[in-house]
Image 1 (cartoon, rainbow, N blue to C red):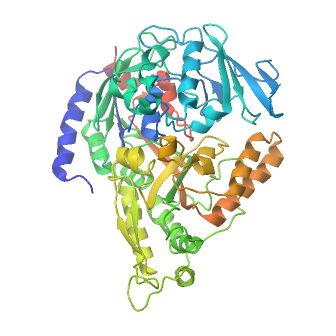
Image 2: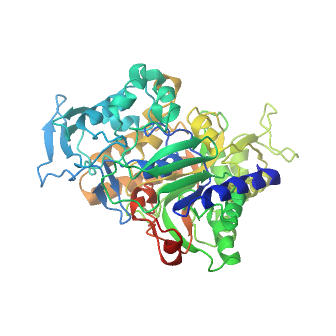
Image 3: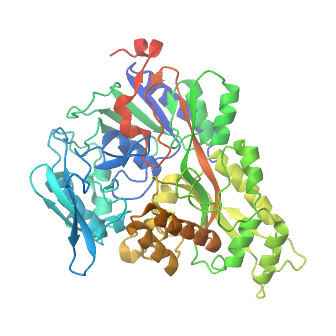
Length: 558
């Protein structure tokens, strides 16, 4: 474990004291602290979870996996006339979408969210020096125009099957952020979301951030300008407890009311917790679109060899890991699309546990045992790799130990180099300072992974570390398939393209698929209204529906 007992004890006292200060507060535990609070920078789940309490996206997928408006009034469609095909100068067909912001959409200082804010946000996202995570989305938005105070148009350079889904178009308050954008290359370090995250005017959701203690907790209070349903809790405190044993201890000590499913106890720990404390909490197990895997840096000369990547996967008994740690609830992954997504196919190359085949592949790749425990190549170099994951996550650390042992059995030495999540995702991954890294991608329904897989989405100094293709996969066929999937409007034909992409991924192994993860939401008996979504958009988007019932409602009366 990364933290020693004395650190655990120190965590318990302030959390418990803070939670007990007022009866109308809710204390939430998550296992990571956001590397940034800027909506455009970095794709961490921890950030999305917190921002879900204080911001509203233009559109999103709800718990029924349907596309809905959140900040807008009506989804554009060709039927309602808010979507129109347009001819582009290059001869291609684009689409122009018209969105009208809700009349009560306001920043937390009372200022309306406007079409001018949308235009400014597009300018920030589209500037190549900004280094935003979803750079591709902003590149394809070739024009954004404010029609009036609440209405704006977005022109896209292609017509896609999900044309109305601008889920990741983050609208920023222009009057607050414009000064930080004066030098685009420095925007990520000058944004008020990080330099002064409690200033009024940054948030348009049910809550606003009033305190940030880096690495520890974030305090949120009701947004007085929020025009929607009044949230039940006066204050919410989100605690980051990166050691999952300490996270559980805080919950039992009363320092936390709940542990978030999106980023809380791993499934094996939640199952054990449920056995030990049967009936004390409401526990919701939610299978979803979470893909646990190991990213491989393909610019590493050892990992660039497909035979080595295949050997690494053949040497892992993923079925046994799933049964012994996760009680069979987390199915083995053979590619990147989970079985719950309609575009999933089982018809992909598979790598069952086969140590003998792993050894043969390593021999063929020039890594020989030569009577020693660790293989060497012709130059005498030992086959030693490093593996990183989020430190303090007991489940991942247990999996690492199993992987380390099984790889040792075939002659591969692996050194563990775990890091706090805000370091791993905020620096090591985006700057590609890793060899192997174990983590999860959380996706939306039929989510085209352009940013994660396309060749031009590899983070680098030249693009100010934008994009999420951390592995550095450069595959022309994958690029073509990603483009074709997006623009294929026929559902059956699109499925064929998806299946080919999944098979290509499984054949080339830019990452090692492990399993598809279920989340465990651990909630107090008195809390109602928390609805897991099963996809990347968190339950916090609907925090205004959360409330206390029964004895909890009485104890937390406002």
